[in-house]
Length: 112
Length: 114
Image 1: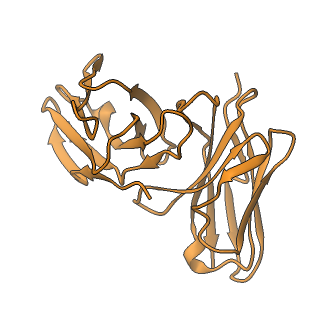
Image 2: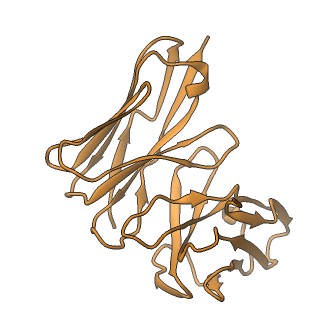
Image 3: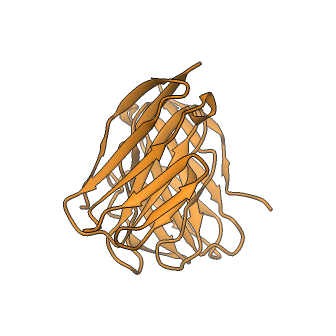
């Protein structure tokens, strides 16, 4: 099945520092989605990227899809304690239906 | 509006017993997914429904696991002869069947097999 590598597995930052998580695939992707899961909660959809080189911003969050559509990144500028959680990428291979394969996630801890 | 509803929220069962987990998707969502998440781990795909049919059940770990969906709505995931390694949070998600639409997750059922 589809394999996706997400790094790092874990990151602990001080409030105000930046944070980046990366998602890498060995195959070309149709699209990639990002989810956030707060401790004790369920994954919540953040954004979907479909175009090569696409960049989308949501306040302090910047999402990027690689030119080859094999990798993606999520960057948080000036982290806040509310950013704590695990960030998952989920990849699809076909433009029609395909099972979304989730990465193992990056757990972010933010110290005040 | 109502989100994805799962029941029970917690289930403790003895090894060897059967359990049934229920998912009520968002109204109008034709696609329904079951995932499993072990403590501190990622999401493991189990099965996907489009309407009442399951075009992808490649993630079911063994023949002890089965799922059905009726009326294009409610889905049940059944685990027979539960084992301790089945302990996990079972998450259900639904989406509009328009390509790879965003998934809307329920709060999950935490299953503990003793």
